[in-house]
Image 1: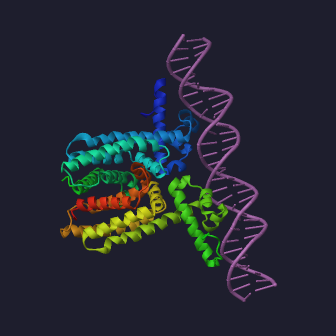
Image 2: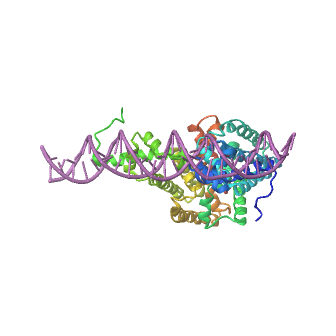
Image 3: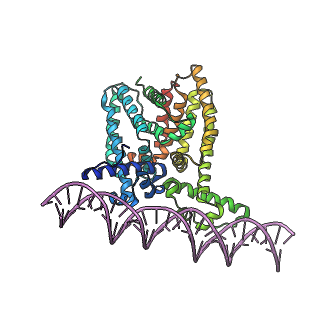
Amino acid sequence: MSDAKTPAKRSEIRQANEALILQAAEKVFAEAGFGGATMQVIADLAGLPKANLHYYFATKEDLYRRVVRNIFEIWLKAAEAMDVSDDPALGIGAYIEAKMALSRAHPDGSKVWGFEVMHGAPVIQDYLETTLRSWTEDRIARIEAWIAEGKIKPISPRHLLYMIWATTQHYADFGHQTATLNGGAYGDAEWQEATEAVKSILLRGIGAI
Amino acid sequence: MSDAKTPAKRSEIRQANEALILQAAEKVFAEAGFGGATMQVIADLAGLPKANLHYYFATKEDLYRRVVRNIFEIWLKAAEAMDVSDDPALGIGAYIEAKMALSRAHPDGSKVWGFEVMHGAPVIQDYLETTLRSWTEDRIARIEAWIAEGKIKPISPRHLLYMIWATTQHYADFGHQTATLNGGAYGDAEWQEATEAVKSILLRGIGAI
DNA sequence: ATTTATCTTGACCGATTGGTCAGGTCGGGC
DNA sequence: GCCCGACCTGACCAATCGGTCAAGATAAAT
């Protein structure tokens, strides 16, 4: 077995175990929410005794906090895709593609984010008010510039962003529903098809194509 | 006080109390999810002793089931708005308006639906496979007819529906996020603005305007 | 080899949970 | 006026939860 216990330098143990626990926690929190998740289930999934979880993460809330913040950072990094081009069709198109790829790669993370926000965002409220808010206003200004240049129609930049978030995250958060209506989980072709469909409607909707 | 105990005919007591409990349960389930909600909190919000809840609803799961099914029925009824016109701009526009109005009127219901689907839809899986599936296929056929008649562009009807669901429900499920970015909860004007923005982009996106 | 700090873990605890139940109250049919 | 079934509820229970702890194992520093 490739995952048999290797010698493991002391300094790597913490990093490896924290990653293992965070991965298990993300899945369990996504499936059951904060209240429905139990430390025991997370421990079992990680293959560690429960007491060991509390050695690395003091409380269930600390563990949850780390999971949510991890997701937020991945989220933000992908947002840079919008800056690849001065052409709105390319820039916004790249952002939609990046978000769709993230929904496929990290569906559990997207769900935990959903749980958190639905719950009133007790953990990441400060991030919403600072980081996300300034990011959003920057992009709104950028889109408004495109409108002023006549590159796209005079739509509402704010609600365009919300539509991109809503739509792309829908394929992660409501993946069970789309899979059921599809008769099975999405494959490569279906993800590609969904991405193109979303891009097509949104880009035409703002007059970028 | 208008909500003081009225004589209350025997037959109405059950109906009134069930409604009271369901209303409280919807809010608590929306705020905490199934696992995070407690019967005690629901009872307190309903102003009834906990044991009384178990008189009307045998288990927490039964109560949750009723809440989810109530939402699903409201959901389906509003879906008829799409049939108001043979003109795609009017039909789809009316559907978007109806869904946005529902997001505003029943944000808690929308959240409980979100929790349920994210959780793998254990309670309404059969509804997804039967009722929602056939409804979806009917609308896809209708949209395909519009495409065949040249009334709209040849977009993917299925993903258009997903985009409508995702976007409209986003304003309920992620209402805390949009409110935070907005600097406060949405008022009449802001809901109107959001509805118009969504309609504008989606209808132009499919070539209906 | 001994020390030291990190890591591991079974056993345990107080608190909370969903659910039960016996013993009430109360309204309406007779 | 009496009685039956619907309605109400405080007290209680077994199960499970997050979290603790003390004792042991292990790897690096001396």
